[in-house]
Amino acid sequence: MIQATNLNKSFGTLKAVNQVNLNIKEGEIFGLLGPNGAGKSTTINLISSLLKADSGSISLNGIDLNTHPILAKNSIGIVPQEISLYDNFSAYDNLLFFGKLYKVDKTTLKQRIDEILILIGLENRKNDLIKTYSGGMKRRINIAAALLHKPKILLMDEPTVGVDPQSRNRIFEVVETLNKQGLTIIYTTHYMEEVERLCNRIAIMDTGKIIAQGTLKELQEQSKTTEKVALTFSAISKEQFVAFKKAFAFEIQQIENTLSINCNINKDLSTILAYCTTNNIEVNDIKVLKANLEAIFLDLTNKQLRD
Image 1: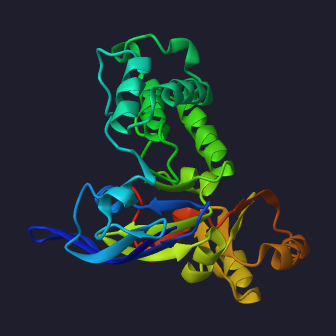
Image 2: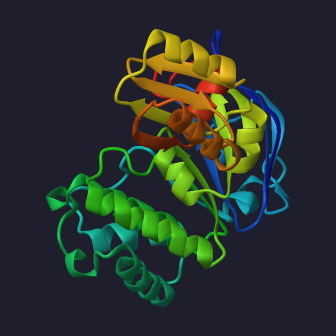
């Protein structure tokens, strides 16, 4: 559905996109995850043709973007990072305006607007001016504008930045509904929990490069990140800690009376607890620390995601 090959884009001496390769399948929600400045928005702008690549090729729905740009762009809807609406128009009039730009015929357009306003939960506010809307409501109208011509591909560039929790959750529901209807979606964000909830596959970007990509499970395998168990004891002496480390060949970190242990939870936890019981080490609390995207990103890049 979306094929990007050896994409490069520089701004002066800054290499914003560096040899990026993507192969996104029809019907996927594909996440581009990375910190601010990683190259996510530039990549989206290249795919949407808002920017022209210095080198490399892009194919959308089997159509080469360089050879047939207008035909290729007909397949996509774009939800930009910045709000792109007219404040002194109503939501309905904004959508009429953008629908005409997409050359949707009048009868079809009015029907589409009604359908999409219901989808995003703003049908009762359609005649209110955009300047009276909250940030989250504006974001939802921004999404609506990208759907008027029934695109096959939706590019969403950080669509939840600065929105309230209610609108954020509604945006998630809209994305999931659209995907169930067959829409292919590229979703960029620096919020890991969004990618974990929404995306089938993920590409981690940093400094213009794709560091790793795949399903969450595949990324876990690439990073070698494992689950950890955190055991908190009533007390553990230096001698008990040394004996504990000798008893097990695990990577163990100690913070006061808590041990963070890299181990196979299903296989090893019962053995660890049996050892504690036998050696009169009282366990007060057990927490399983999942190998989530934050841990994977930290392992792959040696930096915090929001640095």
